[in-house]
Length: 125
Image (cartoon, rainbow, N blue to C red):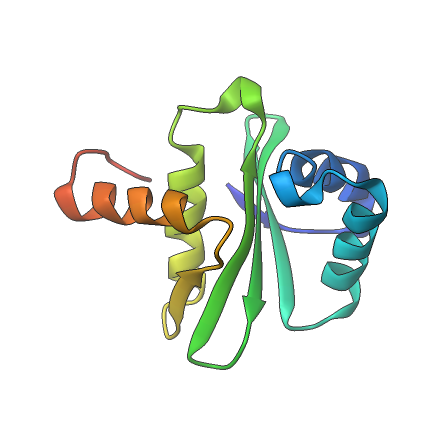
């Protein structure tokens, strides 16, 4: 289930974002979280499986018609279970009136999700 980021989940969010290659530096990570907290166009969502937050996805809304996926990360213990694809699908539902596109850091993952959705090889709920 996708949940909007709350300040109470800051440490969890930072931990999940730290799996992104471009978010390894603590100062950079703190700046990123601050941007999500303060900029209304930056939206951060956490994915919850049972009782644990296991994934995170961050969106920058450039306009009413364009939303860019800035970050996506899944706890390594939960990878290869389709969680990233589920997060992408939910974000596309949230921003259904906008073109949802990836930034350069997650473009290859985004393309894999699109391929799975088009071929129907995987059920995403």
